[in-house]
Each structure stands twice: as structure tokens, then as C-alpha cells.
Length: 396
Ligand code: SAH
Ligand code: SF4
Image 1 (cartoon, rainbow, N blue to C red):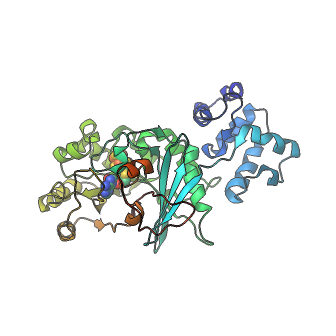
Image 2: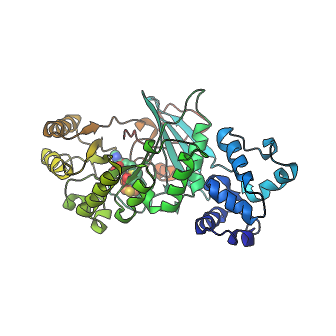
Image 3: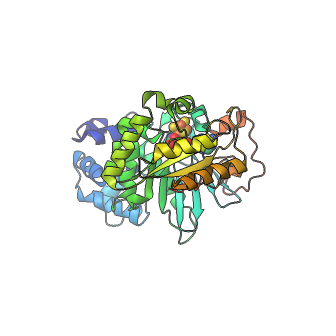
């Protein structure tokens, strides 16, 4: 199989196959179906000497019918069915914990092997059902206020593991429910794992895949400027974790700013707006006495008025040892009001899922949470097991 895969002409398929095969047996590792586009599978079948129209058939079974038992793929020949599992697997990352918050938010913990796990958070609201998904185990961007950032990057997820979070949660929805929106705001920096993230977007948004509207997919970045063009090229929406109103504060709370400062970041944001006619969503985490003063609100307004945007205010979600505090509610209201009075388009995010550690910046490896002795004993636990996971409640 390894020799066969090197015969695949397109480099991205070779990369996908290499990525997918790292954990499988060295001799004949099957490729994970969820990492592949329709074209990838066609090329793969071709390289194996199989008919390429089989790709359409398999895609229909999996994404339209949700059938992954090869024996049930009745329009495939018996001979093809019997050999298919040798070169294609339909494995999804197992759900090892499922928690339900009192506010309706649900958190799913996935085992991604070697003792590592990632989280996805399902956030219901009146007009949408949003899934917040992870792109990496841990994160190297080291934002000072973020619990995920406390856990250094352990591994980038494969496209199959990203699509897998969506499939697993979809398969557990109530009758008639459908995930309408996806936000890449879980664990990890999506633009630090572009190949897998944009492949997963291809699978989730194409009509041969999950057929979600691209306008309902949002990629949030801390500001990896050279990769930001990929977001508008993929036709999905941009959110930027701004979190500060000037370079001095941003350098302090987000080390990425020392590499690409606010001026460079805003150039990329303006390009996004020009290319798409869309607005950027700026996320602004309010840290007591660090970013929550009225002068910061004024500076934030001045800074952002040159870009078509909306601002999401997120009061800091506390976690042990962060060194930051959540601002008082009164201060949050004053800050919000000041921005509204100045004419900014600003939303104040309700914090959701805090009881199950599913709020923004609370996602991490549960082992780290255990070490920090975070107590979730009051959670309303649903699903199989009884540990914790995380998310936020994005409204982008
Ligand atoms: N890495 C990407 C996406 C994941 S972080 C990014 O940074 O954009 C998702 C959001 O959670 C970001 O906007 C981040 O600023 C915010 N966040 C991180 N830690 C937080 C915390 N402790 N409280 C509130 N929001 C937090
Ligand atoms: Fe990584 Fe985003 Fe957390 Fe920063 S805020 S450490 S980029 S996950």
C-alpha cells in the first residue's frame, strides 16, 4: 500500500495519506476516508487500479446515507466490498466523555490516541446549532489568558479527526436536529494546521460531503497573518482574536503580536473585507484592569473603525494560575455601553457551558484540569462517562 500511495499523482493526497497512515501498521495501512475529498478518493482508487466512479458511490453511502458498513454498500460489487476495508477505513475518533450543561451546551471529549484528547462543544441557540471544533491538541501560540495555551502543542489533528468531531456529534443529535454552523474556536490555532483544517472545510462544505454553507463556517485566528488569505480563498468567514487595543498590551497577552503586529493584522483583515464584502468578527477578551478600562474601549473603537467589523466582548473565563481576573459585571456593561455610544457594532457574549468547562479558553487536556484540581462535581452530566471538556458560545 505504501508503494501504491506514492504512485498517487497529487501531492496533497500523498500528504493526506502520509498523515493518515502514521498511526497504522507500517505494512498495509488503510487510508482514513474522512481525510479525503471526492477527487482524492478518485485518484487513490485510480492508483490502486480501481474504477474512479466507485468514489461517488462510496461518498453517497457515507455522507448521504450515513452508511459505513461496507457490506451494506449494495451497489458495490461483492469483490470490491470484500477488499475495500484493506485500503479504506471509516474510523472516527471515539467519544470518551459527553457532558451537558444546565444551559443546554454540550461538550464532547474525543480520544485521539496515545493518551491525548480534544474537545468539541455544541451550542444551541434560537436560530442555530453551532459546533465549536478543535484543530490541535494543545496550542503553541501561548496566549497568556488561555487554558489551551497552557498546554503546549502536542499534535496537529488530521483532517479525518476534524471531520470526525462533526460526524460523531451529528450522529448523536436528537431527531430533526442538524448542526447549522461550525466555528474553529476549540483547542488549537487553525492557521497553524492549514492543510488539515482546509481539507476538512472542503469535506464539510461540498455537496459530495456534508454540504454545509461556507458562510456558516468561521475560522478564528490569533493572527497568523501569512496564512489569513486562505480563509477568504476557502469562502469561509474570519474571526480574529484581537484581545487588546494597542500593540503594547497585545504583545504582553498574545506573543504572536511580536511576530505580526496590529498594523499587519489589520492589513490582512482589510484584504478579507475587500475580497469578500464581509465583516470581520473581532473577539475581545476582557481582562480586569488589563483590557477592560474605559480608555481601552475608546482606543478599541478608534482602532477598529477603519475595518468593516463587529466586536464580540468575552468576559475572561477564569482558570487556576492564569494571573488574570474576570472584570466585574458593572465594568463589562460600562465598556459595552461606551462602545455602543461611540457607534461600534458590538455584542456581549453570554458565557455558556461554564459548569462543564466548555466556555471560551477553558478547553484543555482533562489531565491538566485534574492537576489543577478544577471541580466539575456540580455538572449535569450526560452521556457515558464523567469527566470534563470545554467550548464557548460563539455568535459570529
Ligand atoms: N486559536 C484560535 C481559536 C481558539 S481560541 C484563536 O485564538 O482565535 C477561541 C477564543 O477564546 C479566542 O477568541 C480567545 O481569545 C478566547 N479565549 C481564550 N481564553 C479565554 C478565556 N480564558 N476566557 C475567555 N475567552 C478566552
Ligand atoms: Fe491558542 Fe487561541 Fe488559546 Fe491563543 S487563544 S493559546 S491561539 S487556542
